Image 1 (cartoon, rainbow, N blue to C red):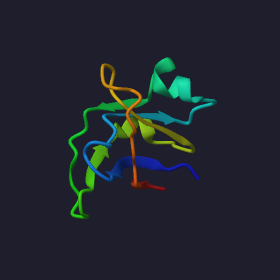
Image 2 (cartoon, helix red, strand yellow):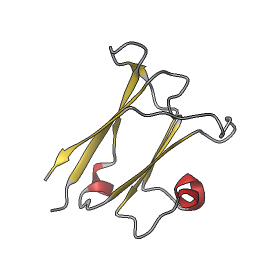
Image 3 (cartoon, rainbow, N blue to C red):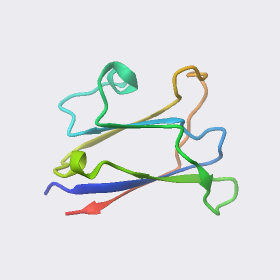
Image 4 (tube, one colour):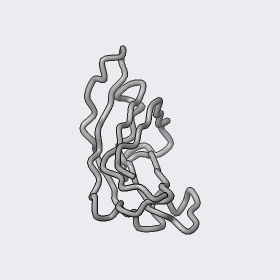
Length: 104
């Protein structure tokens, strides 16, 4: 059954590899990496999330509150982790934890 997404929890090994751009796509019909990187409008986008120590070594984490109205009837979710425009887009981005929080 579809879910109502409320927030995402994302963890990265350290602040230097944490993504500075996170794009969410609710129920995308078809999506490739170029589309996700900016070729298609995201349902919601987060720029420069406020990463904070997660309490696990050098790891950092962030909780992203989504626009609840845009994610009420969610059957599929596509997520793009990358660098913001103007940053070194070739620099590695690493995510080691990812949780979705919502209601059925």
